[in-house]
Length: 98
Image 1 (cartoon, rainbow, N blue to C red):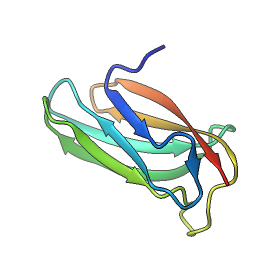
Image 2 (image 1 turned 60 degrees about the vertical axis):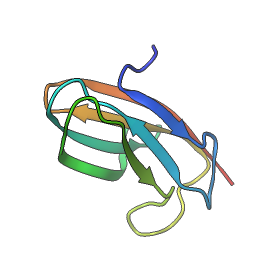
Image 3 (image 1 turned 45 degrees about the horizontal axis):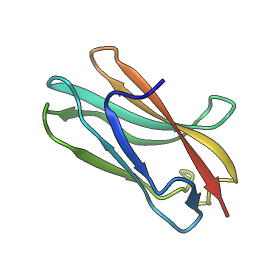
Image 4 (image 1 turned 90 degrees about the vertical axis):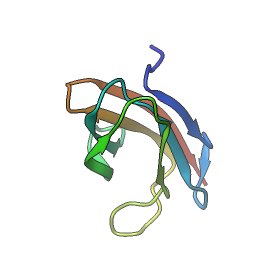
């Protein structure tokens, strides 16, 4: 399934010292939340929480590949989740490698 609102996740795969840029748009004025999940569906990091986003704008939020305690995320597949207050949710995989 091709995401409709998440446009670019780069770089992908990600080295431990790189920053992932998540570029996305929203269909209407809405609040957006971006979270990173691991393969066990646990939240690894919350990038933004319920922030106002307007339509027809390309937004860019970043993840440094680190856990909340500052340690680098382990090698593997992680999932970027874009959740809108309208109930729309998109998932995009990102690969971490050292």
